[in-house]
Image (cartoon, rainbow, N blue to C red; front, top):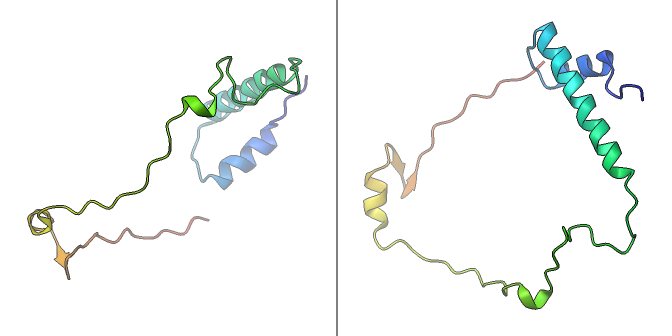
Length: 106
């Protein structure tokens, strides 16, 4: 079976992800990814009954065994002013979060 992730494709993916890898790291990761794809293909080759549910894992979970979904409930904090006193910066009753500088990737 030929490698699905060629050195050229891997180099392209590394550039898209803006990673800095040594040649040894890149080759190691490329081989590991190809090994994982090989394992996935081997699993896909196992014949399965088409009626088998995708997530059965050998254990059935009928709807009766699952708990009912709960309704969302808003619980207000009993003392929001106390929480705001612990924040480093507050404005109009909200915690001010520092801006994260944006960086364009090339």
